[in-house]
Amino acid sequence: MAEPRDSTETSLPPYDAVSPPYQEVCPPTTLVIVGQSIHALTADSPPLYHLSLGISSLSDITTEVELSRVEPKQDGSGRRRHIYDLRYMRSGPGGYVKLPSDSPHYFIERASRRVPGLRDLGLKKSRLPGKACTAALPVDVRGKTSEYGIPNFVKDGAPVFSVNKNRWADAQGLPIASMHHDTAERSLVVTAALPRAQFDMLVALWCCKVWESGVANAEKVHEGIDGVKRKMRLAREFGMSRSTSKLSIPRTICAGQDRPIDTVCSVGPGGASGAF
Image (cartoon, rainbow, N blue to C red; front, side, top):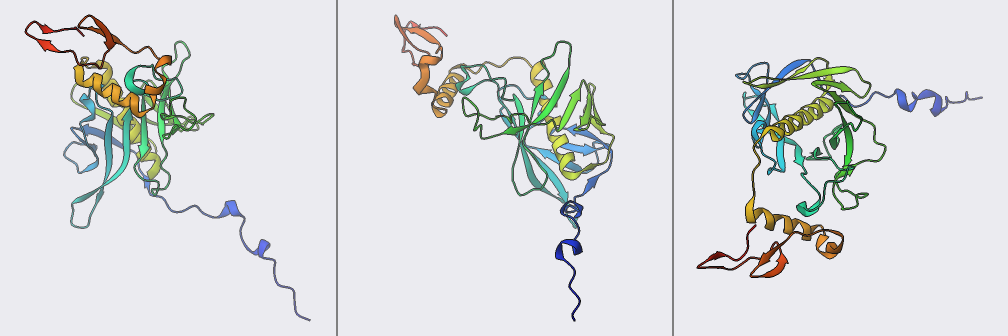
């Protein structure tokens, strides 16, 4: 009589015991921003990341910066892999409404869904009095639940990081890094070994914090009529032109007539008919 074969269920390890795919672990280090590059330890070391714009001195006119990871090649050069788009939303669609509280001013969007572990995250400041804490929360970049169809925080999403003053912590509240800023450079001291994806997300969000700090301390830039036209175009793209009754659209006096602000006033010998 043949002996019964072992059950498949007992011969295989449980599902949660299977090792996850290998992911590179990044050791503790110090990162410094030099122009459009991010280096380890010193400015003359090979760049680890590259930014499409210098993040330290941007105004609030800029809305997008690309972040690429520099991957070393055998010949000693580096290949840039675009991993994140850093984004800034100053206000709601068209610039005529305040940004809703469920949408982030600064957030990071994955350049590709193929890179494992990366997530779309946004920075949200605490509303509690006396609290200077900021949480990095999951973001739905498509805004499926947003009133205006713009990127918003995932409902009940758990924080991936938290920032208390200059100190970063992971989802469990364990310290992982600290930010530093002097007159010469901005740096991030990473004090814990992190999986590659978590390290990349930390770097991208740190860049957003540097961007935010620069905007907060920069002189205000006035866009003029080009900025007004841009806002009207954005409003139309988001469908706001169909719901102007819900919004207060700025108007101006042009040749004695009340007209929308995007109306171009005629300019004669006496100058413009209306003033902005």
